[in-house]
Length: 110
Image (cartoon, rainbow, N blue to C red):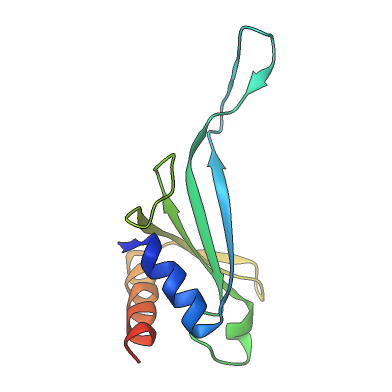
């Protein structure tokens, strides 16, 4: 569990490339005007190469998700996945989440 403020500080301090994307529901509904609407249910925050190493680490993305509609500094993000572009595989285990948050916290302190 990490806050939006910590994620912003990390990307600014370490110069990490990041993406912030809205997260939408898988299923939508038709509103009164007859338009199909998929409601926003949160946010996805992805960072590339959080370890700062060269090699295959440059092709690793770590994604965190938040279930708040509005995004403020105190919004809590949870680990979603680590995606390797080299082999095209997602790692979603608990150990991966601990490693990612530990790396972020360690690099923020230094």
